Amino acid sequence: MSNDEIQKQILDAITTGKIKAANIILGDNVQNKIDKVESGGIGVKIVHNGILTEESTASEESSPKGKRGPKEVNLFVNENDKDGVSREKEERSRFKSYISGHKLGSRKLSSSKDDVLLKTIVCFFMQWKKRGYVNPNAGGMAIVRFITEKCDIDYSVDRVSIANKLGLLLSTQEYDKEIMGDVSGYF
Image (cartoon, rainbow, N blue to C red):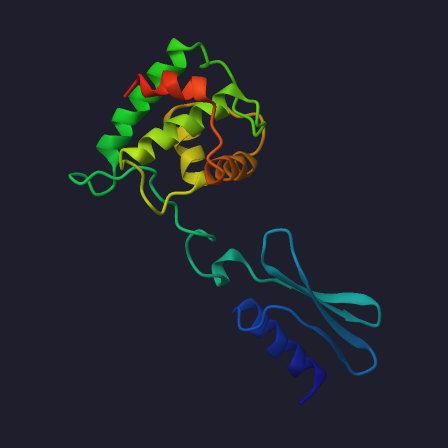
């Protein structure tokens, strides 16, 4: 098999997703180098005598369809409403009422342990969980999506940092007792 045939087979295998990464040297003058590219695909550079002769990228089209990562989970469940939409509307209204009543609406959510808005979210989540409103598969990111997308709360750091901090605070059951007393009054 010639170097050209091998190059073609390698390029085909990469662009169809059959192989993910390799570093191959063919003969004395041809080198095939495969690197990850920014788009998340695989790039192939074929260099012959120090000159780039062909370049290919495995595009998103060759990868499985849909989003990567875990499937998004709704924060709330409701026996009468499989996807939790009516519960979500009710709790959105309750949360926004609390936020506006305590003049927290203009604040940006952060991952700081001392952030009042973050402490409030922890207390609300604990109340929701205590009452059986929370989807058991929901994690920190489901809370952040609900707060930022449904309740229109802005944030000052990336949402993953906030989700991680929420997960930590909820796993250690850390909450502000004074805020919890206020939040409990809204249920």
